[in-house]
Length: 230
Image (cartoon, rainbow, N blue to C red):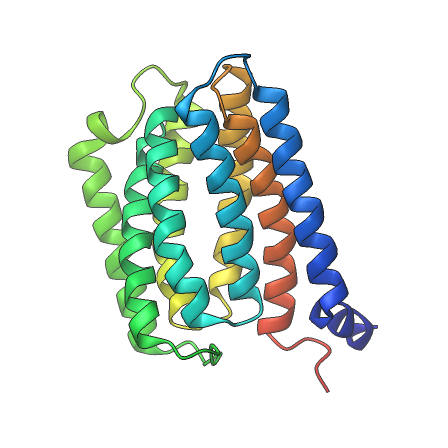
């Protein structure tokens, strides 16, 4: 059974279907959010959706240099969009991701080599999590939306730390990073759902995109851990 799923996830047919469905979902969400008049956030959310789908698919297939290069651009769009949504914790994550993508572009080869989690990775992860917690503690008034409910503030703090660590581990080629992205995606689905509920333009695009991200994260965790591989 594991080998069947492994072959399915590795197939080009799976990627094509996932990408086409994802693009259609993003377009449908954008059409749904169309207010009848042009808004910049609507356009940048649409572009960010397309870029995000492409970037995670490249990393899923271990295309390090291409995924990192495009990731720098995508992270810029994400930072701008989340700033407009008021999720400023994610703005910092987006800028941080842009830096790591830049590092990955110069460090990674065309193919990402998945390696074992090391003690150094653990130390750096703890340091990044601690740094993220310190930033939130001292600058929470400028990072988190002031008028949001307590659960939104709490989830924003958690997803900030989880994404900071997961992004670092992903660029380092560690399979455990995708466990972190699975958790982060669950949180972001809740946060983006809240933004849809409050009527933020473009939020539905990111909600739909995050659902597709989650499907991809399950796939990549399966592949990077080598389940079903002969």
